[in-house]
Image 1: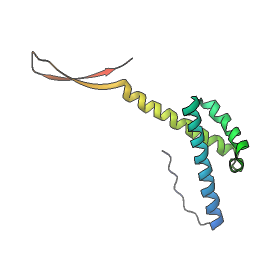
Image 2 (image 1 turned 90 degrees about the vertical axis):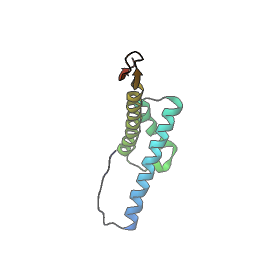
Image 3 (image 1 turned 120 degrees about the horizontal axis):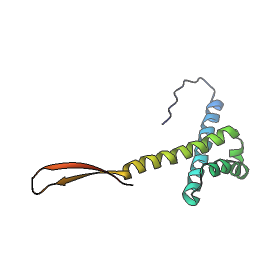
Amino acid sequence: MLIYEYKLDGSKAQYAAIEEAIRIVQFIRNKCLRLWMDEHANKNELQCYCAVLAKAFSFVFCLNSQARQASADRAWSAIARFYTFSFSIAMTSSVVAVSPSRGNIRSTLFWWA
């Protein structure tokens, strides 16, 4: 998670521009995520989708192309982070086995191939 802290002393118009840019970036990320969910797009396709969004929506076109690409990259990072976390949980499971003859308990960690 990225957290940026800053103190600004701006006008209401400047604050409105910042909030609008944040909303546009969130819109692009959500659209890229939806594209990935529907069509299993890869990272390059998400980057190309930014240009499609810029042509389709005028408010997306107002945002800098580098910012649009960065928001698609952040969407791909979230997807990769989800798969890394889910894969690591799916690959390991802790199983407790009880030996009936000896009466002792042992914990075994299995790695699934």
